[in-house]
Image 1 (cartoon, helix red, strand yellow):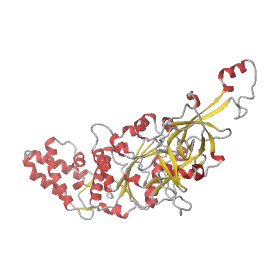
Image 2 (cartoon, one colour):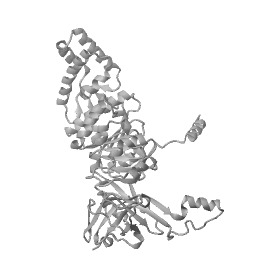
Image 3 (tube, helix red, strand yellow):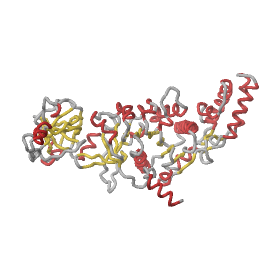
Image 4 (cartoon, helix red, strand yellow):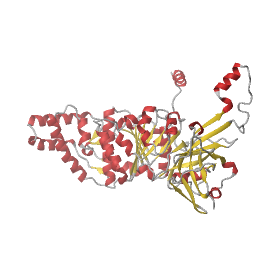
Length: 530
């Protein structure tokens, strides 16, 4: 059975014929990367439309790809000739009188992605390009329903009603091709391999992550979010979760288990000897605390436990006066910090009982934010490895603040780098949002297997350009001009075969509160209220 029959292609889907020219302005010649074709008169193929080009002598195989460029050559519209007509006062009406004119040709280019082969009546095989495309062959628009097979992503469940659903995928938007659209499902497995959502301000990053949260919620996957701007407070309510402000009685970090790298920065003015005394005592208390860990409940340790240990180990390191000063500095932190606690904290309760936990860190300084995020990540990773909490997804907004690049990263970068590197084995997924990927730690960006790219500034685009899968240069150049709510999805070949442009769907049961304001309207509203 021919591929035209299996795919149900009709004359209405025929858009052109593969061509060849020595001139690049006419599309050039077919290669293993590009296929030029002459557009059939009267047809209007759209940019990024998925198409196939048949092969001569083999009706069971075809090349497939997407339209990435095009040009129109009109001999009657040459600038020199048009100038002469104007100079002589001639008003020509036949410059573009018909697309059947012998002086007019429209050529488009296909980015060659692979080959489709008919195995039997109902089965198609997708493979890498192996044969050079032939000229003079028909080019058809592909039915939208075949696109998920080309991308190797989940398809809509047969029993899905109004809202497209898939047991193996997250419904995030639609792929548009040839005037039609098909639901886009990000495979569930992509989350455990981590996701980076990148784009400049106001292009739809937070909105898209809200859509992702809806999908995780419906699949009963717990979510923990670090929120800098307070955008997710309403989302927490909509998802029947909890909104917590760091540094209040709702959320404090138990000092006994956060790790020495996070604990020492809480204490200003330390000398090297002070660090040695505190560090050795703290590490002993730290390990004793984890030996007592039971059911995800952090043990109730008092500050005195640390002071006593410092008094015991201190004389082996330095003089008594230095030990006393180190204790005094720790006591000062214990009295004034709003972030640390020595009391018992039931960390496991949040993620086992709440579908969504939003931790607001916007009221803290950046150094305190880094410490809270790094400490919490360390604690959650340890609890997860001991199976005290379920698998979950960690969402970090403004990730460039917590994961900056450079040779001396803050503790949060080191902890999160380790967490992201190993979290897949712990069944923990990480979603990072950033408007400035050029400021982020490169190693972490590379570790995020899936990237969702909204409109980016050219400098930030250069940082991620090498991580955009098989998108051609022509499409990459258009990323800075992509409309709001449209993103490029790219992932590893085992998750998604090709990069693709997706229009993010609307939220269905959460409220987006981070819309860009109209300042004139905002000022008028303020004046009326005051």
